[in-house]
Length: 93
Image (cartoon, rainbow, N blue to C red; front, top):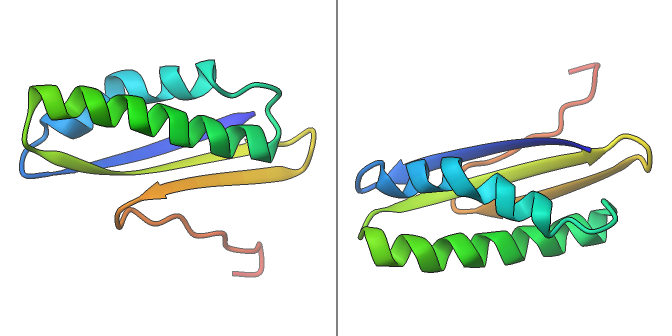
């Protein structure tokens, strides 16, 4: 499974820094069998955990996008909070 994440802070960088340090570890720990359904659930679990932590350390926030591609299953899972978008562009453009 290939995973990419974008965290874009607003109101300061503390929240996005915390996401960068912790979110993917929580996501991977919750990813289960790597199916799209499992990866989507892992996104919700990981984002909720980081949200609770960020609330304790800063008033800043962060948008987040996580893209996970399971090449073996041919499945794509996208988790999006806020306005950090992910675009799927075909080879033809």
